[in-house]
Image (cartoon, rainbow, N blue to C red; front, top):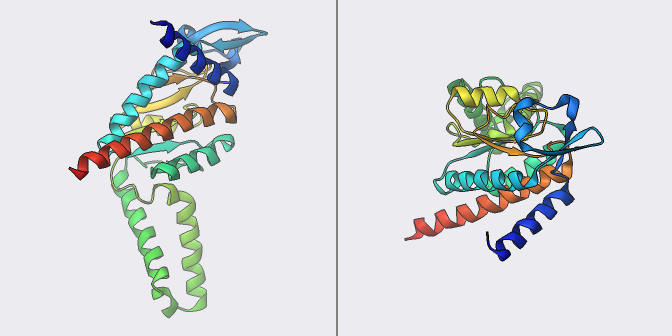
Length: 241
């Protein structure tokens, strides 16, 4: 590695440290399969090797860029309260689907049924906007509004997901293990943040990092957003020819 490359890597690692990506869990809670990503233990807490984080993040970003460039959807999943707003904003910025409240069982493994519910939800929205629900009584219209609100809470983030996504990005695989499990069963690659208390083996593109701190999650999501934006621009340029 050249001197310039070393300086760039040091700058990246300094940014990561400032965002708190290196702060792992208590040693007593550490998962044995995360040992290779642990740099040291300080005051009983594991410190993540940021050189490896940078390497894993770069590989994950390349994969996500390729997926986006091919026109595939990346489903962002982050139901932890600290991650919800970050996930929603990131997904909306790059036009990707997201789950930020509760993972609905069968979202991937029973996508045909979920698609039916999505189509029903979109149909109700379309009819309400066109004024077609006004022919019903006020009580019936109120029931439609309640149904739409419930469907919005469940499916609002994936309303435009018309096929199984090309990849799933998960903030916390322990909290959203059902999402990871369904992705594995449907052969959808998983990119995820993995803290030192997490088994990384179910993840295709693990990124060893603190996934509890807002600053750490935002740092990674900003990198993902930037990467997908560039990939989409590249895709549009190719389509223009």
